[in-house]
Length: 154
Image (cartoon, rainbow, N blue to C red):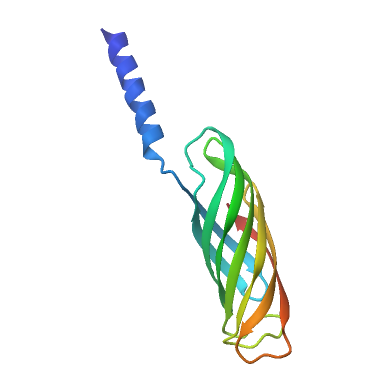
């Protein structure tokens, strides 16, 4: 009788663990980045966060406010995780950036840029790089800009 109770409890625990994880995964980060200076990112990916070993590809959406600007990213992500912890990830996103509070690289405030940004992660370290085109505002000196960053996140 005890063995049946143990088996039943084990099966309940396994189903609770698998059922307790959503069909999406979070993405967060803290970076030193140009032109935003320091930024925090938060978002989600359509890759399920419910496997002990595995990976996949899916959509990613991320908001990235910073001290001197903000970005919105929408793109694709490929990731590999082990025991629910992301090991590697690569994102390629279409991004929109707006500047404020005297951004780095001599950019003016209240400018809008559209571009493509890539972000790669290994364990908790992240690197990002992107190229952006000026689409709104008055800043004729910065038609194309580069954005790069390094930080922690997954």
